[in-house]
Length: 185
Image 1 (spheres, helix red, strand yellow):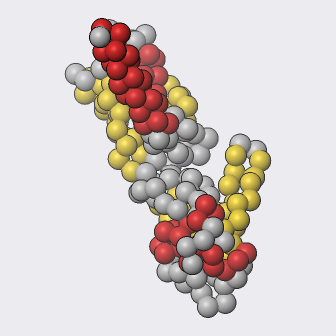
Image 2 (image 1 turned 180 degrees about the vertical axis):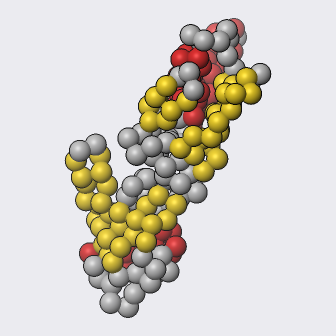
Image 3 (image 1 turned 90 degrees about the vertical axis):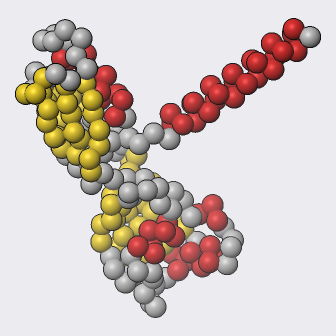
């Protein structure tokens, strides 16, 4: 009986751990152009709004330059806390995102309203095309691509718009990432 309870408890714990891993991988990662509010408790001079620069860094008094792009808010908060420990005893740092302006995608080609769009929520290709007012009548529905940069390499992802409209090839309706470019010939 005890071993059965122990196995059940371990199974429940494993579910919670795995859920934590999934949730951690879905956390928002910061992008160049995002705006952060940083404050250190009980230090009025260490309350500042910072923007993540194009090189992916932020600058904060006493801490200097820190890498922020591709990191979570918690990662930046911990890094700032470590840097500030050199000057303050047990600093309590709070970091929050006030603008996700760096979390943008770009839509170009034969849509009604091409341009750059800030993603304030997760978007797939069809949702993004909806933001751009839909395809123009002369768009080539079967030749749409998503350009995605992975480090120094660029990837091309085909989108089968005509099939998606019919409920087919739904796996080509990919979730977009910051910096993606949708090209509609």
